[in-house]
Image 1 (cartoon, rainbow, N blue to C red):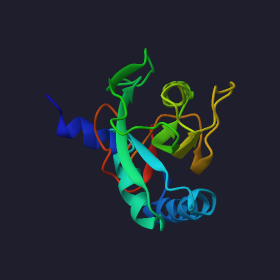
Image 2 (tube, rainbow, N blue to C red; image 1 turned 180 degrees about the vertical axis):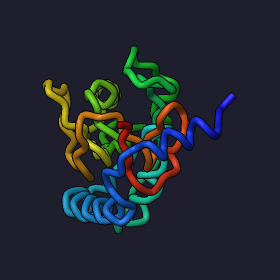
Image 3 (cartoon, rainbow, N blue to C red; image 1 turned 60 degrees about the horizontal axis):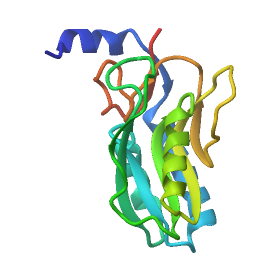
Length: 180
């Protein structure tokens, strides 16, 4: 059973890393960058559920070009704070063959999830693969993939808000926080 007091305690003791205004500016910049590169491609945009839902919902109206939309549901975290095995819950339902595909996710942490999505999408016959993440975590080891579009870089701390949760809570925050 979720505990409201515990969730509020996590938020009240966290550090604000990026305000809602800074988040919005980052999404505007990403939309401009994505439009410049993919605006003539009619891409298939895949949102990674559930973390990317807030970011995707804010980004899509800022993209001023035609696109198709679908989602994938892949997870390494569930409600844990450490990544585990990759679990595929839903593969793309739209045909990706010969399509330019843009995958949107909330955060590129170690990069394992996005790398697995890239591998699957390319195996399914995509013409090109691009990735956009709202947050790129700065970690001390190489990642198997680098995002093509990044909103913000975050320190190697547990971050939440704007689609990213902490123990299942606070995906709905408009700003980015970090646990102390």
